[in-house]
Image 1 (tube, rainbow, N blue to C red):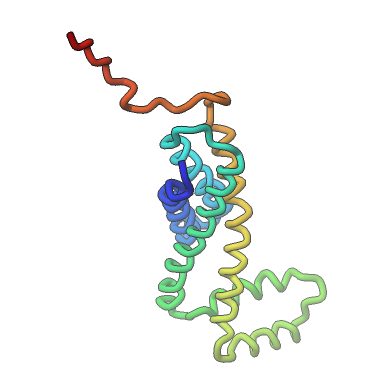
Image 2 (cartoon, helix red, strand yellow; image 1 turned 90 degrees about the vertical axis):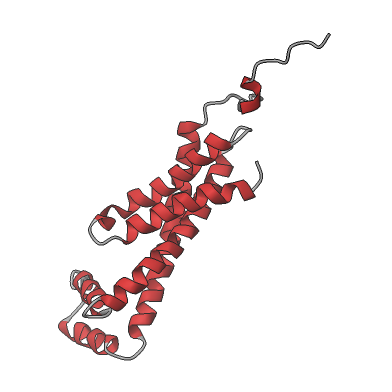
Length: 176
């Protein structure tokens, strides 16, 4: 199979990854969705492949699924961010909650960060940085899922080909 045949399985795995990672309640298991998106892409590709799928092909499928998943994630997050009554301030508050646990993060640091967050464009910069982080994590974990998918689902031995559906037809009777 060529790389064009990789697009459909990678898109399906990426869409699953992106949608499930962006939904508010179930996104807490986002690493599972990232690995699962790559795993699903590998499974779907193996199912349709006429040749043995290599581990490298599984990693590539996972990478494509991770990139597509990030795009889907962004497309879901932008409307959610715009519909949020606080805008992006809930993201800032969540970030501040994490920073409060840092050693040496003082109330003065919190005040300075809050003032910085209130400036125009800060939320867009923070959102962009968050998407870049999402892309990096997706492009690490989804290929891991793709490789795992090949290891789990590719059961053909070297030199063995997938059965062609036309091979199951009965042979033609000899013509006389």
